[in-house]
Image (cartoon, rainbow, N blue to C red; front, top):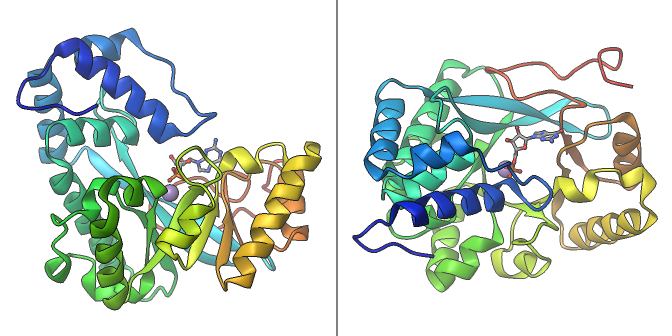
Length: 288
Ligand code: G
Ligand code: MN
């Protein structure tokens, strides 16, 4: 659904809820909270919440470790958006609100400025940073040559979903090509979730694929999932792609992904999103 100049309050509330569901992924549907409905029924309220959150720097970044499956050493971190603002608490809501209000560019830039600042402060580190790009940012609003992250491009992996190529078509693909030329690498996020099918490997030609956590969840108890993940890893490796297993929560999921040859792993089992830069949990600290 798209909005013109007029905002219907109920439409906004419904749309925001849908966006939360969409952004949260298939099995991560957020409950519809009445408090949010009230907040969402007033465009001015959402707008002022977002403006305040941006001004007061209530939007911040946390970093979750991504480790090598082979030895659990840290390969990099995914930068994730967090907000202390009560109504726009989840990253999905911040992005949905920014999208409706036409302020995605500003939020995206605030995110990349913050990540660049952190990378500057930790110049001695060599790990890479995975950062989520909103599909709409892949249109012409992304000012590539003056982006705050530009000088770190070789250490930045941009996560995109297939929604990008579906919505913006050739323009998004052209934008990705230009980003690659600047030294950034690309990951397809949430592979296996509704909006990111295998065709995204063909259209987006990424360097990395991130298996959606719905494929990882309960992997050890689902022979069919094991077969699917096995096939995806095999396919990805044949094309020279690196595979990241997301949302690893328990020992058994970890063990199956390692045995299937998944290259990199991410999830609460290995480390939660935290201020820059936490260590991976030691085997003793991991939940059994
Ligand atoms: O869509 P994307 O893959 O970028 O989503 C990442 C989100 O998943 C983050 O909000 C992060 O906090 C969350 N997350 C990271 N690891 C885990 C995990 O092990 N389990 C669950 N349920 N969520 C996780
Ligand atoms: Mn991601």
